[in-house]
Image 1 (spheres, rainbow, N blue to C red):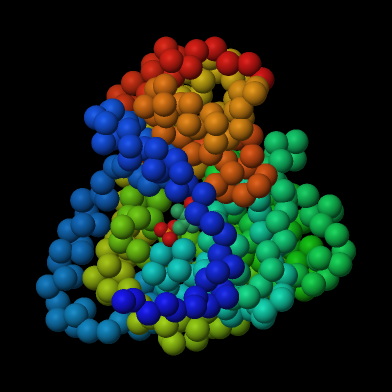
Image 2 (image 1 turned 90 degrees about the horizontal axis):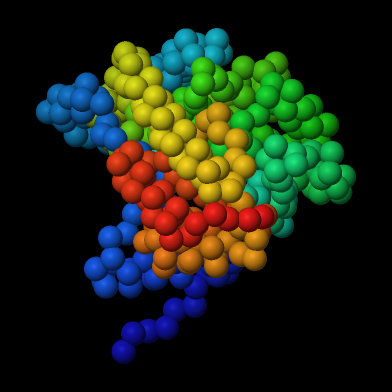
Length: 394
Ligand SMILES: *Cc1c(COP(=O)(O)O)cnc(C)c1O
């Protein structure tokens, strides 16, 4: 008989997995032979560019790469990151002290909480938001304070609405633009406000920016680090996952405030031994090579975005086209919750959309669609929606 082991409180404290019900329904449909089209998962469907794969193949042959890498990343990798920041944003970084490699930015986002949060400490987290911000903080024993992202405020946190006692107790704040799941972008003024808020309350800012290169209509999202004083109050998380279709490769970085970068590196040296050097070399190719593949992908996503938003608007939505990310965030029709609408769409159209509540309580009343499916399948999904869901009212 299996022994019964009491789970640690930190694991018990993790929020329940909210997609379990919809995933079970999808499984049942698939088992019944329904052709399901998933618009649910934000994972690039296009392949990693060939020149990056070739670099991995070449580097995999070298024996020196078969040994333990450094847990903070090869200097050459960190230099490529610094070079990319300089070219793309005009931000100068010291590769040795202001960049640390990560096993995907998710890893660093979860671990930064262990560097700066003690049990009971407060961390300000966007709601809706990427679940790892709160997840890492909860595992570190901290208390997330959920700041709502609302349509009225352009899905930016209203810093002036954060109670003073919360701001005083808060040690860290996560922000994320271009934003998952809302597709919102932030203007320069927002970043300046965040920096002065951080200074006023001594809060470490963690900006998560994996979608900085997934932008449309000529828009170029900024880096948090390009604003005066940013490097003194925080760090930016980034990765090659979305930019170069490398989600499976697991390599990212954190850059900025040198003491914070150092703390994350020291924590990591006790947990992991870095990413396979051949993968670091492949990421260097991505960051320093020709960026045509990125522009090509932007065009593909932009075209899909236009098809999707136009089709939803013809059914009664009134959506603006997101300027960045590969997500469309939309309200559910009148009389529905996020869950009931997602279930209806699955049931009637065989299409998977993500209920907004999976990203926090303030995601209620919304759903997310990812543009990471081929145009043909997306068009088919939209035709099914038109036919089986029909015009909607709000
Ligand atoms: C995809 C994603 C990440 C994680 O990307 P990695 O593959 O771990 O680098 C982090 N934040 C947000 C908001 C994301 O959507």
